[in-house]
Image (cartoon, rainbow, N blue to C red; front, side, top):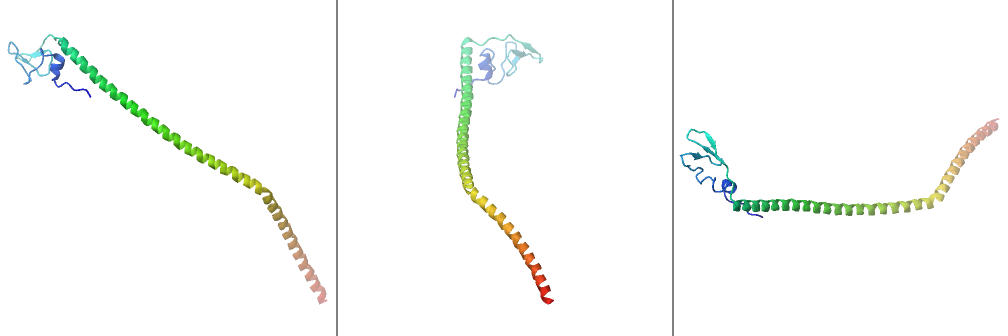
Length: 167
């Protein structure tokens, strides 16, 4: 991680020519007083602000500031790239886990399909027997109807026989 410049902002940006002292103000040539943190402005005894010409920081300060800016930008970009890399790793792991889950589900579906085919084959092999059972059931129903008719006829015949016997 890059170190942060510990100089006051006015020293780092404006250079020593416009830097405000430790007490927050300095006295100028004519008794004017700088306002703390006001770059290039002075206030006279009547509270009127007057502008001063801004001076550029010296060349070594600009180079140092540029190096500091590039170092901090490098740290920032490195952090962004690291976060993006971590996001992609997370997505990759989630994708792998999802793939494994779908593979398990595929195996389950294949097993279900195989079992369904086995059941269909067993049903197909039992189908002739089921057809025979259906035919037997129809025959039993027809036989039952014949038995009822025979019972009804025998009851009528018995009633006639008793009638004839009484005579």
